[in-house]
Structures are given as structure tokens and as C-alpha cells.
Amino acid sequence: MIELMVTIAIVAILAAIGYPNYSDYVRRGNVQEAPGNLSNYRAQLEQRYQDHRTYDKGDSTCGIDPPVTTKNFQYSCTLADSGQSYSLAATGRTGTTVAGLAYKLNQRNAQSTTCTSCAWSFSGEPTYWVMRKP
Image (cartoon, rainbow, N blue to C red; front, side, top):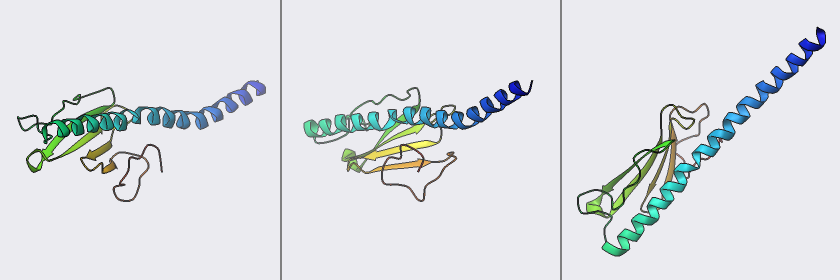
């Protein structure tokens, strides 16, 4: 009986250590979606600008149509300066491991990250994409 209790205690300790690490690993895997998609959208918008000298599609919307929603993120694109600048955003969907994370990118390739519901925090709004706990 004592051997069984020791075995259960060892398994519980291993689970207590392993689960947070596994959760962080899954989150880091899901986070990769946003920077990849934002970079792809930026390249498409820059191609549009080279061809048409504006990011505007002609109806005051971005020259590309990013997916509104994917498995982990909600995407948006806003124009400014009469179609001469834009801001792309990827916001973590509620109920996913990336909820609360938001990545932004503009025509100057200025990157930023915000996190409203993360257990960890960083000072200010970083001027880069945070991919894991600081």
C-alpha cells in the first residue's frame, strides 16, 4: 500500500511540473499563426501599393481581404491617410490559448504586442512581437 501511495505522489509531482510546461508549449505553437499571417498580408499590401500607389481597394477598405477569423485569431485591417497607410491587427480569440494577445503591424513594419489577460506581463507595449513569456 505504501508503494502505491509513493507511486501516486511521484505521478502527481510529475504532472504538476509537466502540465504548465505543456500548456506553454501549446500556446507558443498557436501564437505562430498571427505573425506569419500578418507578414503575409503586409507583403500582399505592399505589392498592391507598388501596382496601384495606394493600399485602398477603391471602396475605403484594405487592398487585400485578410481572413476575418481563423482558429486562434481575429484579423482586421484599417486604412488611414487616404489609403497611404494601414494598420493590421491580429487579436487572440476568446476561449483559445492565445486569448488576450494582440499583434499589430503597419506600413512601416512597426510591430507591437499587447496582452490583456496574460498571467505574465511586460512593461509598456513592446515594439516587437512577443512569442513567449518574457
